Each structure stands twice: as C-alpha cells, then as structure tokens.
Length: 261
Image (cartoon, rainbow, N blue to C red):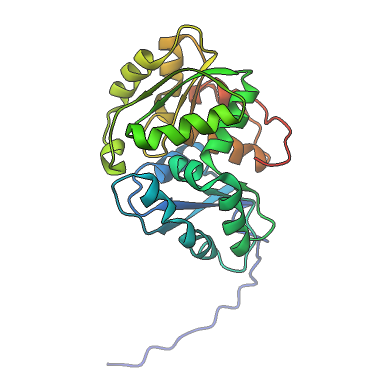
C-alpha cells in the first residue's frame, strides 16, 4: 500500500470558550425513554447543550428499588463532562427524588459536581406551582398506590392542599412511557378536581409535557408536569426567559426567587 503524505494544516484556528454558551447535565435512569427527547425539544438549542449520563435501574418501580439508585448518583454526575463546569444538572426521576429526599440527591450530585445548581422534578414542580399561585392541587401519577403515597406526603408536607390524588397503578417505567398522549389528556381531565388551582402530573417517564397546553385547554386550569417543570427551571437558570406558551402557562413565567430550585 503506497504511503500517503499527511499534511499539517497551516490555517490559523480560532476557538470558542465553550462549544455551547450554557451546559446542562441530565442524570437519567437506564430505562428512561422520555427525558432526553423532552429536553431536546424544550431546552437544547444554539445556546444550550444538554449532556446525559444513565445510571442502573431495575423495575418494578417501588420505594425500595428507587432508593437503590442513591449510591449511583455521584458516579453518574461525574461522567458528565468530567472536570468541566455545568450551569445546571437535573436528576430525572420524580418518585425517587421524593423517596430519597431532595437534599440527599443534591448532596450526592454535589460531591461530583460541586457548585452546580441541582434540579429535582418535585422541587421544580413546587417552584412551578408557586409561580402559578397554586396552593390547592390535584395530582396524577402513573405509579402504584404504594409508590404514590410518599408523593402525596411530600406535597402535603410542603404546604400544598391535596384536593384529589389519582394513580394508574403501574410499576414499570417503560410501560408508563408507552401511554399515549391522547390517553394522558383524557386521564388528566378525569383526575382534575373542580376546586383545585392546578394539576400536577408526576413522572419523567410520561409524555405529558408535550400535551401540557392541550390539557390546560381541557381542564381550564394550569398544568405542571415533571419534565416541563425541570425544563422551565433549567431554562431560567441558564438565562433563557423567553415565553413559550406552546409548552403551557408555566413556560411563560419567570422563576420565583428561592435559595434552592
């Protein structure tokens, strides 16, 4: 085989400080089908790059299995652009965040990515409901009753009045991801309480963020979903304050000032 000369380019190269102005990390479950497509649609763009690490998880979705992910959080976070700063990092599991506790998740991720704002879906949902002025809420989850109970306790302990709580009784997040958006719209309408200020739809596996505005039109009240809320907090932390009404009423609002997201 003839030897081909390799030429060294003489072009003077220019370098940006970063390939993207803002960098967002996602720690998702190995079984997750929904978070990455949602963040591609709602967050990623010319200014914001989204980078994902997956951590081991095995169904069924029970409090015990959810807790088993905690030791893997730091390892997953450390794999996202090692030794480079991020502008925000999200752990994308609502039920696990409730079972482990927001503070425990923040501590675990901070051990790998110190100084980076950590976003969990339930904490993002609380900020979203506050921004919407909602105190009395209805909640819809895809989980079993056993996994739903910690969710009900979480929102009650954070000062929300639960007007109604509905669950689907599923225990496999891959099955949750297969629920059609049209089904979610119908289920949300059935789950809404007449006297609730807003509806929260839990679970990052559900494809509910894509139909949040459609659900709002059906129930006549604001809707907050797990991925919509985390995307909203992420965008605002990255300095993107543009209203996006196609994503629901929440996506038109500024982020309320708080010590932690």
